[in-house]
Length: 445
Image (cartoon, rainbow, N blue to C red):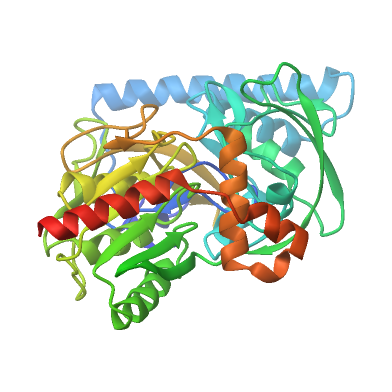
């Protein structure tokens, strides 16, 4: 995760490191948090001695009064609550409530949760292998990660998680849901899900495992100069892995490209920017983040780097599992007229969270929403998503078979002969539409 240092006035310390992130959806086995590449807004920064204006003084009086009330309530809980609670437990609950009351993506990160955030951007995880988020207040599967327990158990994008090991998830904080789904390899967890077009919820038993997810998969020539590359998530190694794939495909005669971002739940914004800029002209706008008006100025991220392939036609595949960093890349390529989007409307995760370490030892942090991101044309996509230029819809059942077929192409050793035969006739209509379009565009050029 990129580090951005900013002065931070505090009665306790003079500075802290602010890690700005856009949470695509807090993942169980991968963080969907996107670190901002541009300079973050200055938080709580102040030049010179503290202001003593009447407004500031009044604000301080109010906060001290409320903190005093909080301390009084904590003492009553400690003394009278039906079961014994430590002050640490009481205050942690207060901090969680304070931040979760703002929106589903803001939270207090205790030591374990903060470590998970830091670990998740590496591309190595442990758990069931699913990215989750909140949709309309309900814990929802953004995307299962291929070749993981969740994928093999049949979880799908859009599945609503109603219970974990029998405990209902209604009003369960996202961070707590992550804790319950994580666990040691070989242990099992039962997830109760509700799926669209199914009348009754179902229980799915999943055995946890260690997971390492390659960020780029399936790079190959499809036919007649049309290349295919799939990015599974925008982890730190993704841009370099993509460049290696593009170099090999160029040697094989690539003159058109299908970039598959389906079921990609996001990742590092830095990785997304470094991916998008490979297909844009230097200086092209990729994404703009806008915070509270009058507090932080808009921040523009533009194409840089040394590799700029602006000649070949591109088709980008998207669906409801494409979120956050994926939406940034898709929006940037379309708005700069470098790609056609094919598939289904994306998830719609476009809020920016700053992860701010707390305490001198950095053993805790807060994650707080500070901005929204906008595509180059000025479209704000949070809770809206990006609609494809060419809609091509598939049913959940069709998509499950498409994923299995895709996995078979990339990892044939995972399937026996009977399974291979059953997948031989599976057609991916979104991919096929992309290939047909690229052939037509190439002919026109």
